[in-house]
Image 1 (tube, one colour):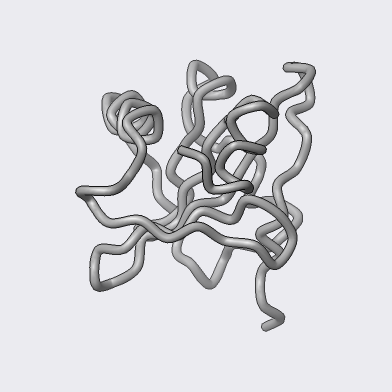
Image 2 (image 1 turned 180 degrees about the vertical axis):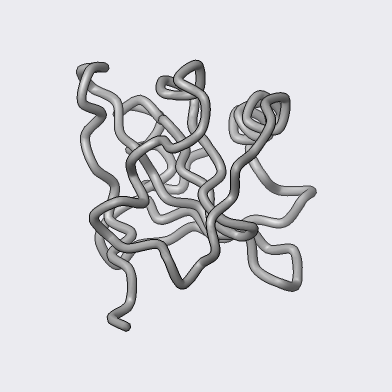
Length: 114
């Protein structure tokens, strides 16, 4: 299986927003893919509050998680959870999330100014 392409994609209905992949590693680190080949790494203590809030909202809904081997680059950015999460983000697998972030915030993360 080819590696997944975690490059952010434009949100289909929210102009200026992106669907951004975030992985949670087995050692509890969060890896946010802010651009092609560019990541930002966080711990529970350093994860930005805005991302923590998004995760809280995602976890407030029942999850239908997929097995990681069934996820491809073309479909991981499609919400297979509840439609209420379309503009927030969702959990794809045990260790993969998609976050909806506006362009300004994403660019701040890319420049590491948060």
